[in-house]
Image: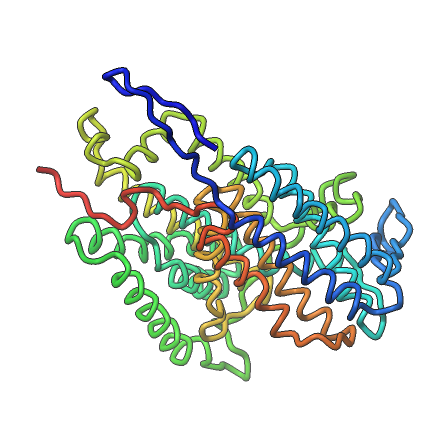
Amino acid sequence: MSIATTTDHGKVHDAVAVRSWKMPILFAALALFAVVVFILLGPGGTATFRISSSGDAWQVPNLVLPAKAVGIVVSLACAALTYVAYNQTKTRGRIATWVVMVFTVLFVVGLMVWIIGGTTTQNITLVGLFTGAMLITTPLVFGSMSGVLSERAGVVNIAIEGQLLAGAFTAALVSSITHNAYAGLVAAAVAGVLVSLLLALFSIKYVVNQIIVGVVLNVLVSGLTGFLFEKIMKTKVDGVTLFNQPAHLPNLPIPLLSEIPIIGPTLFRQSIIGYFMLILVAALWFGLFRTRWGLRVRAVGEHPKAADTVGINVNRTRVLNVLAGGAVAGVGGAYFTLVAVSSFSKDMTGGLGFIALAALIFGRWNPIGAALAALLFGVAGNLQSILSLAGTPIDGQFLAMLPYALTILAVSGFVGKAMAPAADGEPYIKE
């Protein structure tokens, strides 16, 4: 397809519209996968999804789907959408958003039915899947929001893992000493700020490579918390570890909303940290894209020199955002010891800070996108545990791999370009 364009001298040239065939190729590969796996290798039984738990006020019947029939329908629909994607790319140069969304939903449904239909029990509770996933998703969301705050201002935050770990340790220690969970929560935010202060000091003031500083801080926090854990928290008095018995933050169900099937137990039976997470995602999205503050932050992250020329203090904005990101990650770390486990163990974050970075990239540095990506990782992590108990013949490591494979596809441009802010990682030295 050619488009006629006119130059300043009145000459007409043909500009060839640039098409990307990545998505049609990806659709074709997934459609072929659906045909082979969902139809030829699909189970012949049923897949039962339990929507309500016994304690819900509103009971919804179980959803029972024949695995083979669903596999056939999904495969044919995916093949049809692949042709639509090819035709739209050929004629229009791009694929309509609804095609991508419908294809994704259908493929995920087919995959879930195929997996559950192949288990020994052939049923799964969606409430348990999503409520269990929140134990992983919540710290991931806080970590990814910390990354959004830092990287939107132009500072690469590899130290999310260290910020989460510092928050978890400090929350447990302070809460154990004061017997007050809220004191531990505040202390966790302060610990995250202290880690971020070192990141800001070295990467912004002394212009040290931001990635190296982040990696060093992760190692430093891991070693320091491990040392203090051995020397302080493991010390017993009369057989009791006095400094590793933090108070627990209770769940605070919201009347009526907490009774909605699936959504209620997942979102509205949370602790104060869980509710703060929901507010934070919405507030950060609104702040970044609908306020003057957000415009300044994005200007600093995209074109710091231009921001400087209109009177924005670039480095001060970066420092404040990095410190705010540290406080957010510290609160996320407190979730481990004040809600999920109620005790601290060495390196208990288990690399979730790095997964939060992957969610940040998958979500394209958008708070809502990063939160949804974190939910994907959380569901996949919990699904692996649930299916191992349900007796699935599929290797659990394969299920754990899926979100990371999707992240690689996102970063490589198969599902759209994942572009960081233009000045991300670039120090700014005022001339």
